[in-house]
Image (cartoon, rainbow, N blue to C red; front, top):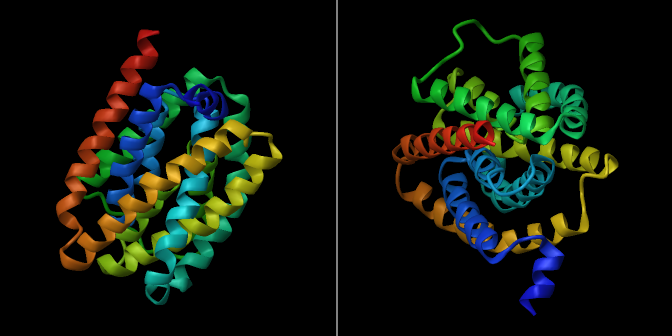
Length: 254
C-alpha cells in the first residue's frame, strides 16, 4: 500500500517524514507571526525535491494557510497599501514563473537560497526602508515581490521588509501580509498551471501536506493570541539562515 502512495506522491519514507516535520514547523511560525512559511518550506523542501516542484507546492500551501487565517484578520488589513502591492505583483509574477520554468534546477536552488539568506539577514538586522512610500514605489516593490515569488516562492519576504518600514503595528502588518499572500499565490498558481508545473504527484503530496499545515497554523495562532510574535522571530530567521547555508553547500558540493 505504501508503495502505491510513494508512486502517487513521489516521496520516499524519509522524504515524507522530513517534509511533514518541516511543513508543520513552518506552519506554526506562519500561524504565529504571519510570515516565514514559504521561506522555510521552500528552503527545506528544495533539499529533497526540485525547485520547479517545490515552488508551486508552496503556492498551494500558502493559499490553504491564508484561507485558514484570512477570516481572522480581514478587518485589520491595510487595503490602501495592499492594492498597489498586488497590482505590482500581477505585473512581476509572470516573469518569475518563466524564470522558474527555464532556468536549470541547480541554479534555481542557488537563487532561492541566496534570496532567503539575504532577506533573513536584513530582517535580523532590523533593516528599514528610509525613504517615504509613494504609490509608484509601492507598485515597483510589488513587481519585484511578484518576480521573486514566481521564481522562488518567497515573495512575502520583500513585502515583510516593506511593511515593517511603515508605521503599521504587528497585527496590521500580519493581517496585510496574509491577504497579500493569498491573492498573489492564487494568481501564481494559475500561471504555474498554465506552464504545466502542476503535476499529479505534486497535487497528491500537497494534499498530504495539508494535515501538518492545518495543525501547525492552529497551534501558532493560539500562541499569537496569547503572546507577542516577536519571541518567535529570531528563531524563524535562524532556521532560514541555517537552511539556506546548508542548501548552498549542498548545491556547490555536487
